[in-house]
Length: 409
Image (cartoon, rainbow, N blue to C red; front, side, top):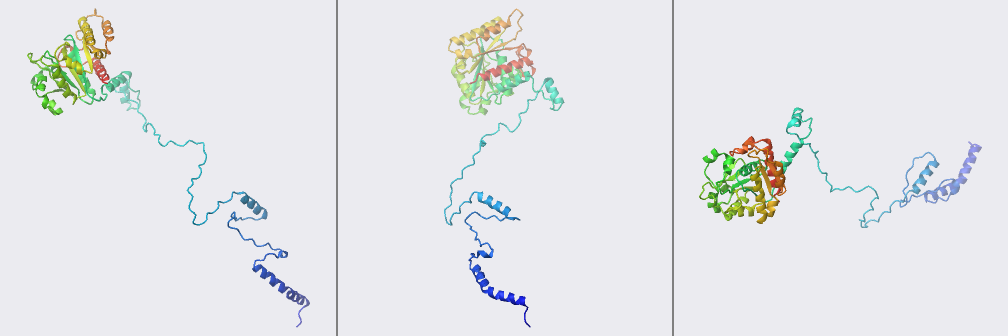
């Protein structure tokens, strides 16, 4: 059956165009994209060494062109080093900044907040205890002064120091001052002090510290016994056999036999002082009355400071002045200038005596003047204990002890 005319034309056209179509398909397979008349874009091969092409999901050619422009304005990617090239260790430049570098060595002054001191007595102390510490007004001015005295007394010392207590007149509080100050030093210092009775006139230092009854019952050990065996002492235990103890105050008793009591020489005292200095940082020496007896030159030679005992009586004040003048004229100017004058109101002089005038006169001749008020616990000449003394008397002994330690340099 013959084909329709339209089909015959279509077959004729296909036969005439088929060889040309085959040639075009062949050129496209071989990579030849010069066939512009077909209306197709030439194939583009991506270059991996240039700026990477970022895939874009867009719905129009305008958006695709905007993305392409932004990619072309971006900085070029760093060039890739060839394989096998050695790595570069050049440091990258640090970013410039105005912020200061942190100081890693600085440490805070404290990690704990400083607590306010607690009041111990008076209304402030009562209020603190009653409120369980909620209300803390701090210590009063008097308590702060007491704490400062305690700090000065307890100051740590490097070495051993000696304070001599002397006067030109007896019965004006020299030995009671030695005991009271010695007990005060023992109360506040971490190391016990030592007191030496170098009185050539049968001194009663140990009796005033222990009480006459206890001292008489104790084994008699005096400074003479210590001297006889001083070469065998090589420890504090060995030295303690020749000492007496009133709490933490250690004492060496003076010789009670009148025939040998004045036999202590300057050389013998220096030997005792050398032994004491090996075990005690603070020593007090009760020198007795006068400044010319045999041991006195050794005592003054080894003394770091002095206590000059005086009284409000006219004779006591004059002798205290004479003592300072004698020291200054015999090569002990520094000791006289740095001396502590202690005026003990032992006998309660009459109102006719101008106490202020005496204090003002003696104060200009020494480093410090301290007055001890009248107290029966001192005036009776018996046992001296801090518990029975008036608060004013105890305060005076604290001031003396602090002044002594202040003078140790």
